[in-house]
Length: 274
Image 1 (tube, helix red, strand yellow):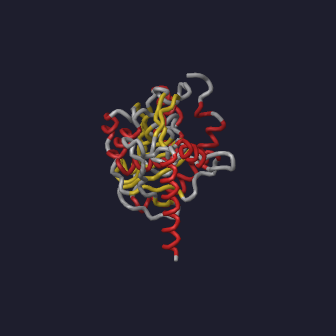
Image 2 (cartoon, one colour):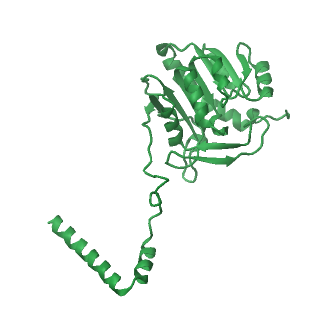
Image 3 (spheres, rainbow, N blue to C red):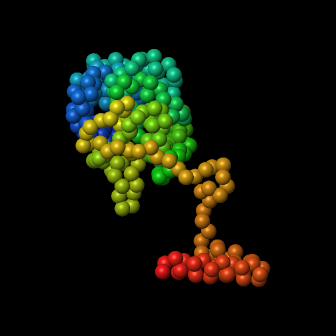
């Protein structure tokens, strides 16, 4: 391991502090009412959030895919049960069930994020908190991305990055009955869209039962009208210039018929309007 870890970089410290403020506020509000006592931090890195969860009075188990991260986390945070584990490996479920499953900064580093979410669901008694980078777009889709190679980040350096809509849909399809976003995301540029920039991260909450909190907003399951097996579904609509070009190339009789249809359509529309 090199002397400079990404998790210890200044920009990461700022990211963590902004995320911690939002997480702490929510958990302090709902911890007692939901009876949250046990938690597992999946993809714990060097243990920053494991320590935060411990400070909030939770019994914490934490796992990471990299042995060197686990060893450093053990050194930094006492009172947490650390171990090595991969979210895509079904053996992760052998840790058991927890009131709160916590998974920050991991899912977008995986080749099989939906499989990992299914594992997380089986480990969740009451509440799942997930956070990560999201791919741009409104459709529930993913993009396979070549990641930069860092020795304390993703394991395989190629991963499926989901849009936020896709992440929400995966949570629902993993049999969580309720999914929420934060009414106010962390006070950090990564969570805010600017005039020349987009939002690149999100935090979501998934649960088996409804949660009453003004900090959260319900997010319905997204859908898409695109049918990939249909060649016309999702096809780009021709521009006015392209339509004109097609009209010019038609034989004269076809042009006449086209004009008749247009005139007839406008006439019928005018009659309906009266």
